Amino acid sequence: MALPVGQQAKYWGIATAIFLVALWFLGDVILPFVLGGAIAYCLDPIADRLERAGASRVAAVAIITLVAVFIFVLLILLVIPTLVEQTASLIDTAPELFDRLRNGLTERFPQLLDDQSTVYKQLLSIGETIQAKGGELVNGIVSSALGLLNILVLIVIVPVVAVYMLLDWDNMTAKIDEMLPRDHVETIRALGRDIDATLASFIRGQGTVCLVLGTYYAVALMLAGLNFGLIVGFIAGLITFIPYVGAIVGGMLAVGLALFQFWGSIEVVDGDIVTYATNWLRIGIVAGIFGLGQFLEGNILTPKLVGGSVGLHPVWLLFALSVFGTLFGFVGMLVAVPIAAMIGVVARWGVSQYKDSLLYRGKSGSD
Image: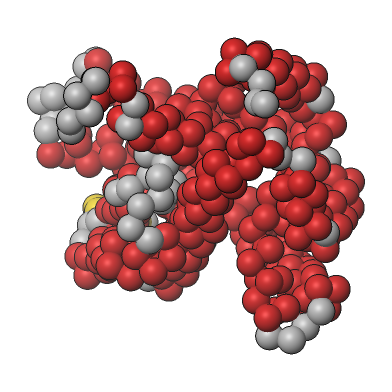
């Protein structure tokens, strides 16, 4: 005989409270294990495919580890130093960009931007503020990241945890399945499959879309000759999980930088006035890169990699990231996506149960 519903709810409520308290107090301690588990979850389908191709589990994990080490070394040697350098250079160049904007507006609208006007003074102070606060922001982010993700965690603990969890992933899921309440095992399995499908669509599918588009934007913008193309591509790819926002924000930032870089100007060199023509072709190429990226995302990448329905609304996802990030820090942001997926799946299941109940249909049972 099953336990009463009220008693079951009490036990599950206590378990949830214990989980949240442990997350609150052990956030920094469990961080490498959460990261390792997330990496193992993302790589498990690749290991399964290698096993179906004839490799053993150990050989599959060894192949994945070697490829991951190669990619990590490549990023450390090539991409990350350039990314940091372009970020610092963009912050240092921001005052100059605003000076050009102020000078251009002064040439075209002199009556609006005299030396005593509020707009002129505001534009003058924006560049100085960005240069002063931008450096502090970058230093704060770097110092916080180093305090949270120290070198030992990044290089040793997380990869080791990920490798061991990837080796034992099937065994762990089987053990968890054995511990499910027998009266609700089929319902929990169905919910688990829905949660896994949602997470697979978002984390694996949408994450791959973000990686592909970020790489495309960065490489294409750098080939187009745009300064800071790598950092713009990184930003655009990072927020691509929000529909249209990544292309819009990245496109506006890239086109704005292209206007500053390729817009015609007048400069006095050794007493001679030199006029630089506006390179409309370069500006159009930068805009076309994001137009093509949006086409690829909507017609090829998202349908193929993500599917028709992710199950996580962007607003709900941002809300979960904000709440868990505020309450539990960086670890909270890591667990926000799976918890949001679980809540969403359980909520949809609850709605379907409600629509099948007498509370919704009434005694007549009519639709």
